Image (cartoon, rainbow, N blue to C red; front, side):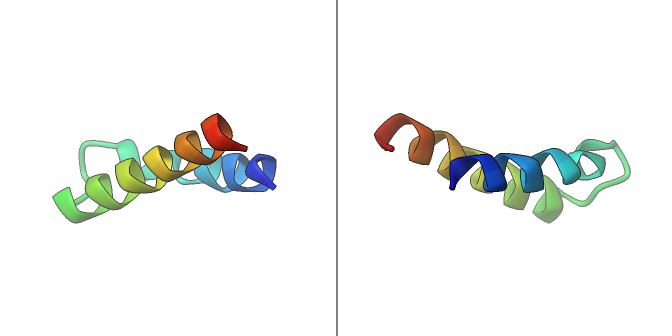
Length: 42
């Protein structure tokens, strides 16, 4: 199922724009880290 999460992560790219709040940046970064950990262990 990591592929589904990677698709969701790619749809969150707008959260990387400069106008995003620090909380949005952090949430996306933490989600990306979880996805990467899933891929490494799965």
